[in-house]
Length: 367
Figure 1 (tube, rainbow, N blue to C red):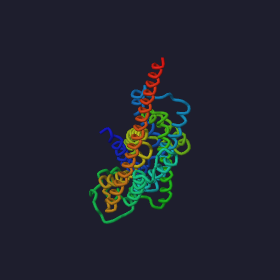
Figure 2 (cartoon, rainbow, N blue to C red; figure 1 turned 45 degrees about the vertical axis):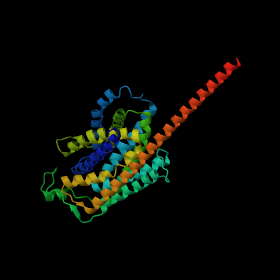
Figure 3 (cartoon, one colour; figure 1 turned 90 degrees about the vertical axis):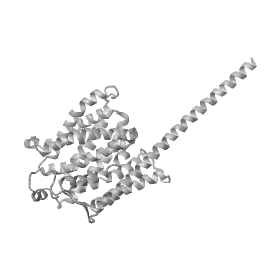
Figure 4 (cartoon, rainbow, N blue to C red; figure 1 turned 120 degrees about the vertical axis):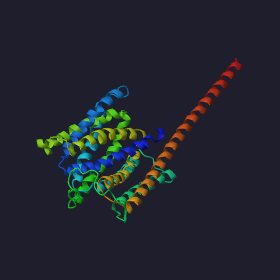
């Protein structure tokens, strides 16, 4: 079970992301200001996870130096600030399904960047290297098929939405949630830019986790800096006081969901997994997001799954397995090399001790 913990954690992360994609799309259509949303979610996450970080990491938390503060500030800028704000801006003009499909650039960008920076070892002639490359291609291709191949209907969703947040009848609900097509290219471009920032965040997260190995405290500080950065943006783009007013509605539910789950829990789980498995491991689970969005939409919003969805899902699972198999073989090979070095050191020590014994015996004979 201990060996499966990281895998289960990243699957949980993608399930949470799948629900958040649909929820934030509905909230933005309902009038939620994206910058206000970013400020509130990170303040809530900081308040929620801060006490746990203070109590549980009191002894392992390193000193907060200027260098660490600068790295965490940059980490907050790339992830919570640039990624979330640009993503929300793009989601206004496109659909949650398209956004989840575009998320498949994350594994490729992260994988290539990690290889170029030497953070990921790729031996293309080895079976494990070929498995990682093939798995990445399968994940991307499967996600595109999952999203864009509209074959015959495979499954039919529920007759009426389980979650009708606008309290309208079915026809008005569907009309209210139709995607905006005229700015599809603009929305897709913004989503793509946000994912580039997120890939850079994953890479930087791996480096920062080594110098600041306290994931709860790191998450708290990152949320703190993200709140300050987005508050600064709000001075220019969210100056209307009514945008900051909270009521018991879908917008408040979205802020709580994102603050507690998508920010506090997910940021912590990702920081923890990246510190143990690396950025590529975390990025390779992104294609599962397309599946969770489609399944959630089919159950909750009466959307239909196509035959292409099944084919794409199978390719994503196969690709994910190939990459994880390659990563597992890398880990075993690295462990074998370390064990070999340890055994060589032991042999050297034994030879040295034998040499010392021979010298001592010769010295006693001479005397």
